[in-house]
Amino acid sequence: MSYRSPLGRARGLGSAKEGTHHFWVQRVTAVALIPLVLWFVYSVAQLPSGNYEVVRWWVHAPSVAVALVLFIACALYHSLLGVQVVIEDYIAADGTKIVALLASKFVHAIAAVTGIFAVLKIALA
Amino acid sequence: MSTPASPSKSAPQRPLSPFMIGPYYKPQMTSMLSITHRLTGLGLSLGAVLLVVWLSCLASGPECYALIAPHLAAWYGKLVIFAFTWSLLYHFCNGIRHLMWDLGKGLDLPTAEKTGFAVIFASLGLTAGVFVLSLM
Image (cartoon, rainbow over all chains, first blue to last red; front, top):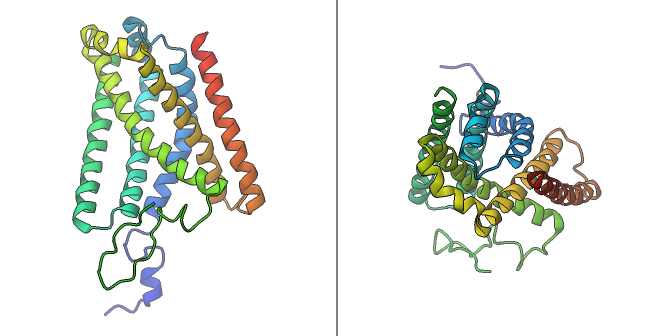
């Protein structure tokens, strides 16, 4: 048997056995997104979006490609955590909730991989 | 506004969040900013999907990009980009307000209302700035 007290076992983990991990990663990605969002908005605002060659040349630059990959990864991870909380808050029925959570995870994973692949395809072309 | 059905028939029909604002709680600036943070967050999730579609078309080649470029230039495309920009900058400003709360700063009501107004004006000002930048 374990000699650890119930408090000792629970401390830092809570009933879900995940502790504050979700809360913490939401904040870590939020802090990472501060400079990434500023860079993204400032850069894209100046892009001539109708000009295919110019936009491709922009993504092709190594520093831009790296920043875009970081932005997509952080933004979609942050979005995944946020959408998860919204689903858990507003969908009470277990079946619907599990399906919605799975769908959200799959859509976020597909979007992240597709976006990063697109950037790398242009950058390494 | 209707309240969602209670899980069990024997349980009393209690009002549930987020359907409390209106019939039970007076709408306040702070609660409106809070729900706007969620709504812009959900909107930005859709915006992230559009960003991926845009990058995928760009990677695919000029033919695919020629298909979406007219939509980016059309009035409805510009409206979506404008809404996306403001949502991103609002969520950005209010997100910093949330991070300050996480540090235990500005939690009292007068400060929360002041920073709330600051978020509204900063997000609008930054959006206007981005609009001007896009014209240069």
